Image (cartoon, rainbow, N blue to C red; front, side, top):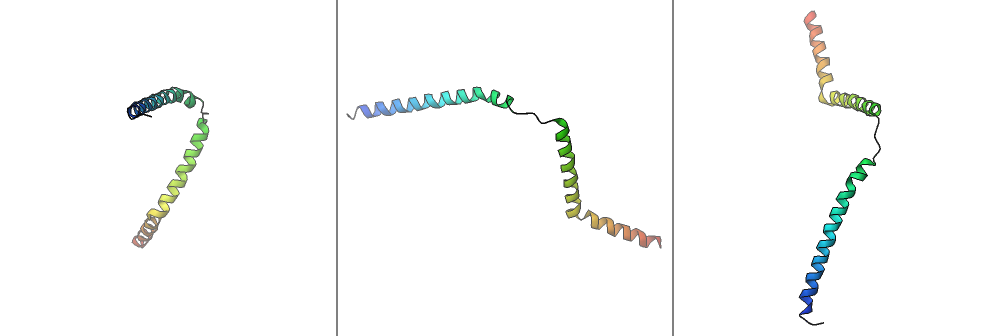
Length: 84
């Protein structure tokens, strides 16, 4: 192989690679809307049930670790002492 051919081969390889990548990006972006439409829809009732259960669990964890239960207990004790 002559030394003059090597730059030409590198140039061809780079252009072929660029063309391949460009076509791959175009083809994959064209197929994207079809793959999104193929996803199944979750019923609204299921989502609402999950959200209410998750919200209740989150609320119990937050009140458990925030110290609000302890503050409520101390507040009730202070109110009880003020009554006497």
